[in-house]
Structures are given as structure tokens and as C-alpha cells.
Length: 119
Image (cartoon, rainbow, N blue to C red; front, top):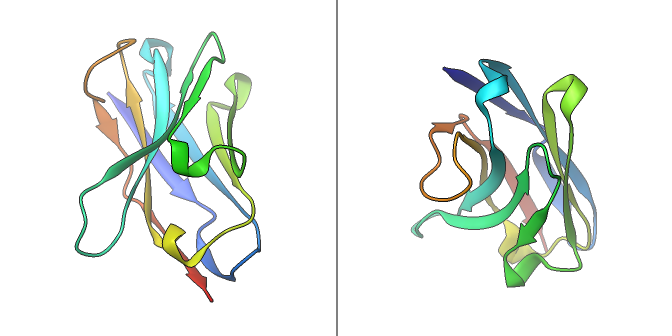
């Protein structure tokens, strides 16, 4: 089992920045990739970014390219999402997730952290 705990959400104004963190514990040596997802009220959860835990290879949703950066520090078992130039439409609950595999569904999810961007 892998446990995930997000932190760093909050209320900011449009154009501001936030950094989310996701601390992993448990059988972290089994993790192949980790990612960030978000869910706005009334909408489905959507993919934001993913990072290979060993490789560091990243991929992003088109709507965050150039604004968000995903990273990780393996020694701390922690993943980050640096969010710059935030927009009101970025308002959502942000979830981190971990997978044993290089593709397919994620196996573990955090509880989520709220990000609210005011205009």
C-alpha cells in the first residue's frame, strides 16, 4: 500500500502562484509514476500532469503547459506541482495519485487539496 497526502492549496488571486506537495509513504519503492489530477464542481476529474518516479519524464495537459511544472524529490518521497499564472478556471480540488505501472489506471489517491483562484 502507498499513502498519499496533499498540501499547499489555498485561496489566491488570478495571476498568483501556488505550490502543491504530495507526500508519499508506505511501499513507495513500488511506485512507477505519480500524477496530479483536478476536479472542479460539477465536472469530471481531469488529468493535469504526470511524472515518472525514476525517469523524471513528464507530461502535461494542454491547458497547463507553460504554467504548471511537476517535479519530485525521490529522497523525500515527495512530488510537487508548481502552479504559476493561475486563472479562475484553475479552481478545483487537486488530487495526487500513484501507480505501480507505466500506463493504465492509478492505484492510489490522496484526499485532495482545494485551490481557489479569484478574479
